[in-house]
Image 1 (cartoon, rainbow, N blue to C red):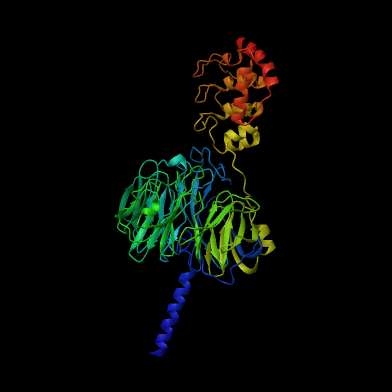
Image 2 (cartoon, rainbow, N blue to C red):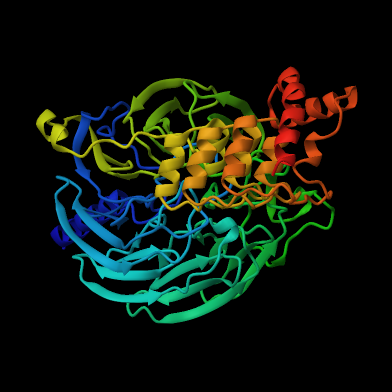
Amino acid sequence: MIRLLSVALLLAATCSAMAEDNWPRFRGPNADGVAPNHPGLPTTWTNTDNVRWAADVPGWGWSCPIIWGDRVYLSTVVSDQDNLTPSKGLYLGEGVRDPAKGVHHWMVYCFDVNTGKELWKHEAHTGQPQVPRHPKSTYAAETAATDGERVYVLFGDLGLYCYDMDGKPLWSQAIEPKKTARDYGAAASPVVHDGQVFVVYDNSEESWIASFDAKTGDERWRIAREETHSWATPLVWKNEVRTEIVVPGKKRNRSYSLDGALLWEFNGKMSSLVIPSPFTAHGMCYIASGYVGDDHRPTFAIKPGATGDITPDAEGDFTDSEYIEWYQGKSSPYNPSQIVYSDYLYTLYDRGFLTCHDAKTGEEVYSKRRLTPGGSFTSSPFAYNGHLFLLSEDGLTYVVKAGPEFEIVERNSLDELTMACPAISGDKLLIRTASKLYCMTSGAKLDAATAARMQPNRPATSPTDLWTAAREGKTKELQRLLKAGTKVNARQGGSGMTALNTAAIYGQTQAAELLISNGADVALANNDGNTALHIASFFAHTELVELLLDNGASVTAKSKRGETPVDVVSAAWSPQTEETYRTIGNAIGVKLNFDRIREARPKIAERLRQE
């Protein structure tokens, strides 16, 4: 009996250790980015130092690796044709307004976690993308999930695919693609619990949360959601009262039962775009959103047991709610999710700052501390062995000592574009970059010959849209964008400016010539009705005026003020005219040369009258 009891205890301990080593979903088993301490986990690394293995990953994807046992799973999408590639930086402009060109291959890969050997791969779907995407994102943005029996891979605007652990396809559920806010595409990852796979698809047409049977793929239930601007991964919250599904939203933060019934909700006056994913610590659920352009960027700590509408009666006084333990109105990040490590809640901001609050009370421990050298961030923080790890889009990881004092103790560079969150298992840290999957372990060393055979890194590049390239006269960048499928006559939100209109403001004749040769329509006007000829004439760019006339620009086209290109340069120069130019120059960030403009205006007016 004693021997049997010992064996049972040993088996239980082994199973417990194996469970701790699994990283089965986005941000790990507890959805919080915190890994068990292990002396073999490194705090320093390079592309070869403390690297156990590295594997090339084709295509593009920001899905995070997941781990079960001795296997690593991730997804990627490979295109047969060049398209606009993701870039780093805080992107607040226009998105990629058209689906990527060419045939794409939606792929699932499995690697051995100890050696990096590819164990299997499967092509889930082949075809052309039906929806656009965010300029920083990919068509493999969602992280897979596993329960140890099956792997559930979501390609958000395409479908949910289920495999056994050895790569055999078991079932799939097609997802009807919908237009998403700003054409950013989907991003929320699936979660699996107790035989159900939960998927949230918030979009601009028909948002929903649904449950699928993990074994058969049959839809168990689907609930409509009145949300359009959220991309957060849902959380299965097992608390002292019940198990529930927490889903943030711009209009309402909500919790559902495991059979889809609404448990509680509240209007948190969330920011315009809701991206950070909820997680739990200290018995509470943390919900946040922090779009950089908004004044209200809230963080909430929610207590379990709520029912119904818990929005407080007092306007803006969220602590008046019985189930909101604490609240901060301007403490949330835009893209990265927050992390609670020990008693502290850390917030990593996209622009490279870190703050610390007391996780139990919300009290500030330290205000914004700048990460140096500066960087931009999409990946969420992770933690182990008393340190926070902040992985920038340049592939530089800042290692920060956990606790009430801010101190950067290491900086580890992989010199490649990186936006995925890592996975951690035992003594192994797995980081996905734009071209590779690295496995880090203390004391390991990647063979130089192996490193030399791998595909080249894809270093991070700053975002440049069509209008920025036209403004700066970057003809090579314009060629790259047009080749990648950006529409030459695309209009900028708010102003309705085309790239040709923009080139006309700044006198970028070579850029304008390139745009016209690629089909730019000289007749297109901005929202004020001004064509490129109106604009080039007003700013007195003589050479550009000639180019536009040579390509059929109309001298009789009228703006919404009823002015032709001749009219905008015909008035006599006066102090009032000079002040108008000064005001406009300040608005567009350019110090205008008044002498040049004053001299060129009558010559341009005469040239236009000759047409």
